Length: 313
Image 1 (cartoon, rainbow, N blue to C red):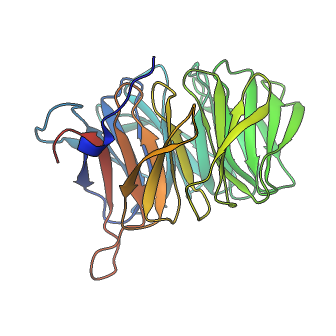
Image 2 (image 1 turned 60 degrees about the horizontal axis):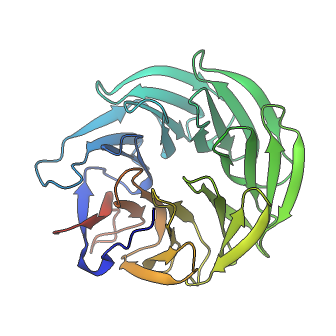
């Protein structure tokens, strides 16, 4: 369903709670809670009313002994969240109690984490280009694979039978799942590929690169359909909105680009004060969470994130 969002009438709100910068933001499957992971070694879960104001309640997830670099929610359960940290552990939390229910000790500093769409497996990538697949129920590794190239962001397709790795060589490696057999290599960009997002409608995936471009791929044909060219710096983070009609991308440019997926045209820019680390659209509403390297006037981390899309500031 296509809809036109009245971007120019929408506002951002700021959420403060972390003591250091926020690396990652992610929404739960119901679109009611947002989690933020920070250099301050904690994650926080915020209850967000899509239309209301109200006091925002947040709960702290404490236990990691290093930066929480990425987090992701169980795609089938609105209160279960997994966090990946530089302390070599991956933890599973209950967002209602704030308690850690499971923990896996892995071999390196974890920087990427993603759930399989059916919620059964979690993939974790570390700084040593090693991929670990965890069985969520037992919370134990079932596959491990080390790659001889730089592996950046990782993702499953919607059906869970294909797995994508973005690499420092400018390629996207496509693997069959669960065999992890190499199916193909897409020559996607002229510089490293940093991030990948899957269109919720299942038609496309998008790749953000150090060459400042975002490429859009037809998932069936494995062909590049178009590129988005608004940013001038390496693309660090990208996200599709819930209808698959808009894509947000961000970098060290001091704005977040929102473009129309079907036309490739930029439709809005959200100004920001610093390089962005994470943008993510809500899975039900047109709310975009974003977090970056914001500093205050004393040049110390602000520890904030913002959400764009409210009718009043």
